[in-house]
Image (cartoon, rainbow, N blue to C red; front, top):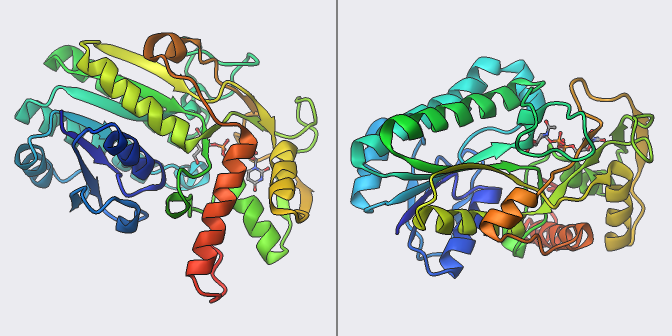
Length: 329
Ligand code: UD1
């Protein structure tokens, strides 16, 4: 098996590449480097710098590297941006999948692991959400992931593809110091940034219907998430056909839990201020992970504190590498 990992130089993609390489699987990465960084990849992994929607390059890459399975992580993931740019989000998160599926069908590549999102659930009505819960996304980002899942399923039926969609919950942490999340839109990087700049973190809602009034999410260590991809690959090579799995830690933590964990790990207070809930933000989203545990034999190994510790180590390494030029991103 040779796996093509689209978005392979990105935050999650590079962890997936590392997990596959550690398991001895041949890997090719494809990334347009819009947010990815080639320095995240091991030297032995070929990197194709291309748009994952480029049909000519996709076909050529699948053929040249004798690819037998694809992990498709390339895409865009900012909820607020998806509200501002819904058409572009559909182009990125659905259009690329259509182009990829066409190239796979043309070249006889029959296995796909697709990176989906808990955003497909919208506002779950239960404490934990299982895969068979109604999918009612509340923002264009979640809509694009749901449409793409449906497209993958339909293509699977029509063209004899086997596939697994992994619905990521909130990926955090770093498997190694050079693999950290350098984005600035998710809670954990924003919390570190608040410490570094002194500009308070805005807690988006402090009177929500949750235990401490702040938003609750399922923070899953990115190395655990990467391992789920490796096990999904194995599942497909063993002949399994089509499945959707939640990929979360199966435990909820509030914004205040995250703030406290950052303060504990860094030994410094986090400046915070209360703000209104973000539009379309569900109060609580936590994964039920019985299905992925049973089918893939996947067990999340890391705690929130492990994830925050590794994220902090990665961030410190990045700031040191920036050489005191005042860079915090
Ligand atoms: C959302 C998607 C998730 C997706 C992720 C990608 C939903 C339900 N989830 O995660 O599937 O993978 O985007 O980026 O749509 N918060 C604050 N202050 C801030 C920022 C965030 O209090 O300045 C809170 C949020 O209200 C939330 C938590 O922190 O409770 C996590 O937010 P964030 O990191 O933005 O991720 P989600 O919106 O949960």
